[in-house]
Image 1 (cartoon, one colour):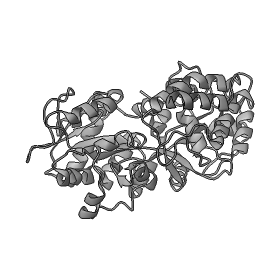
Image 2: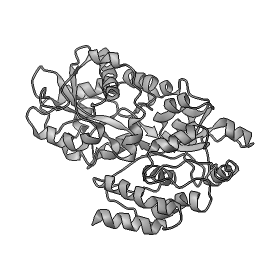
Image 3: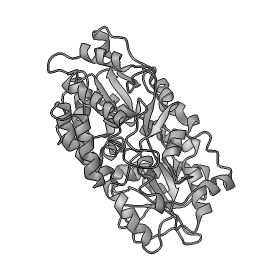
Length: 417
């Protein structure tokens, strides 16, 4: 499981399990109940191994059935980690499913499996104008939309409000420059007690780089780690440990929960993470949770977004029915329900107020500012290798033993070779 998926898995709150009676869950081995039987249920093939996953899809489908009472969907699928390989096998078998899920970060990888939706969007009159543009961009492969997103999660910086106030610091909001961030982090650092918690891997450094508009992958899907601008961004992130000394170098074996627990325990007052963690952090922390942008050089808000959506299998012979199901699954009411119950940032702009409920003052304004200038996390089919190598070599970058240029060249050459 890569850094994104491990983080995303933690956001699933195990609520609504009783809602599983609202749908039929097909066996996770995936042998029965395909998508091609006229009049039968549509099959949604997705990550569905855990109770939390199953509860989430039950909530989606029960909400969609409120929009369309005749909607009939069964769910099957493996764990999140296994989904990306098993979906290819499942679609080549007998009676394949019609509905699939994908992350924007993995849409390029699944592009051949997903039907272009542009004609169905036009035919149905589906309104895409009110869906987050960065997520639609992330779901676009070879110029055509392959999935309709249900969430749009801009990576944010969480902070301990009381720690900032105790240090006499101004609380950051929709603007936060890197110079000010480093100044604040130094004021919050006291010897071994650092201002920022870090996790290994490339997910968070990539969000740091995209806050300045510098991607790791080109728009045509090519890995571009040795681009001088990206190298400079990675070096500035490594320097938070080796030069500025406002964070400790993570260990390669650390999971994301190590930095998360350091933050929620009050040990470290700042952490860069996805907004889907808000509910978990608020439950675990004894302090007021602040939310601001990932610092940029200019101080202006720009985000790396992560998100998932529903697509149609390229070999589905019921595309009109499948798209009607997607319309219901991604409706405003369903996204509002998901935002309220699970804390996801909805992809539909009209549903954003539902996410703001129960959040600290200013949190929703930060998310809105970030979504106004957002870029999806783009990956390549070799991204798991990139993640693994960054986890391995990044520790040496934080410690100042290797430069970002050396590490990025090593990863680029290893993956390309």
